Length: 219
Image 1 (tube, one colour):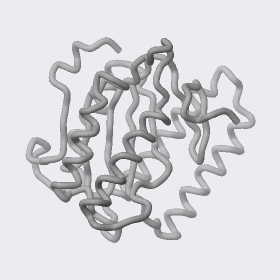
Image 2 (cartoon, one colour):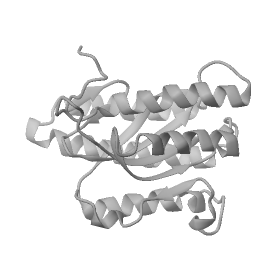
Image 3 (tube, one colour):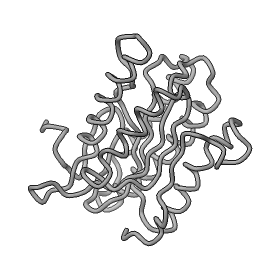
Image 4 (cartoon, helix red, strand yellow):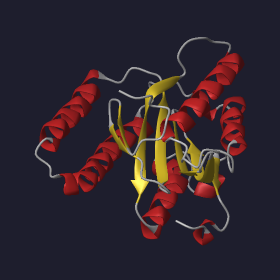
C-alpha cells in the first residue's frame, strides 16, 4: 500500500474514501473516546454489509455506491455524537476552540480553500477544497487532516494539561457533488448546534464560521 499522505483518488482506512481532483469535501472528525458497545456493533455491521455488497458493484456504479454508504453512515453517526453526553467536551472550551479555529484559518489559501466549519463539544465539521501543491498535484485529505489534527492535538493537550490521544484516528469525509449540495451541507454545518439543542439560532454559536460570498466561488 502506498503512502496515504500523498494524493490518491481512492484510499482506505476503516472507511472507504474517494477524492476526485478539484473536489470540495465535508469532513467530520471527533475526539478520541470509546463508543458504547451497542453503537460500535451497529456501525461495524453497517461497514461489513457495505464491504460485502461492494464486491458485487460494477466499477461504473462504485462512486455512487460509496457516496450513498457515506451518507447513511454519517447521518447515523452524527446524530449519536450530537446526543452523546458521556464523551469529553473539550472542544467547547474557549481556549481549545480558539486553537482549532486559528489552525483552520492558518492553512486557508495554502493547503485548501476553507468554506465553513463548526466546532461542536466533541466533534468538528469542516468544509474545504484542497489546493494544488508546488508539484501541481492536489493536497490529499489525509495529509491535510494529519496536519490539522497533529498540531491541534499537541496544543490543546497543553491547554488541558493532559497527555495522550486527543483526536480519533479516523475522519469522515464526503465529496460534494454540485453547488446545490454544497449549499445544503453548509446549511447543515451552520445549523448543527441548533439541531443538537445548544442554541436556538445558529448565529449565536461562538464556534462556527461561514465564508462570505461562498456562492461566488468556483466548484
